[in-house]
Image 1 (cartoon, rainbow, N blue to C red):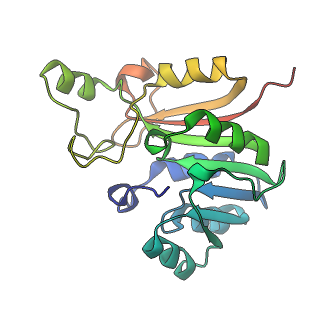
Image 2: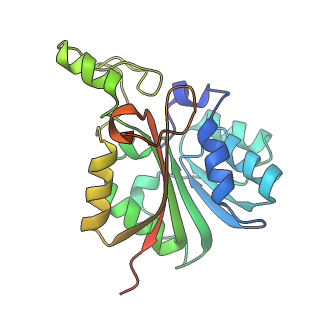
Length: 206
């Protein structure tokens, strides 16, 4: 599984700042669908984080290596059986949740090999997306930039959908930050006014 190319071209990834704010100094991190390794490179620079990326696309694996990132070429959909329990402090799935087929298994594996998980995803409940649907069109936006016929996204989900999923799968949400299209934090009506959701979570402990 690879981060879609149109996402990796963005140079103003404000979710990087949010994620970095949650990562402790010197943490061990696994980035699933790491693309060109930009996030891991950023975390190493600002948090001295170490770790690995997983990427399936040949060109992105090479780009990660050029960025000085340790990358394993593999399909994350096949699972993370190569890693022991609690191998990492954080496992990150950035702008890839909506493009994976086996969501439940991947989230479970994230919390097996990592003490905490972090995901980011475009919020389908964002008001601009709702307007597109009301007009009879598939939404196209900065966070969902594809046409219906070439999108890599398999699922669409809202902030409320993800929180219901977590409640039903033993996942405890530790922190949530929702951003608008300008990258500013949304505090009021986030499921309506938020374009991008960023979550930090772990397992319920009993």
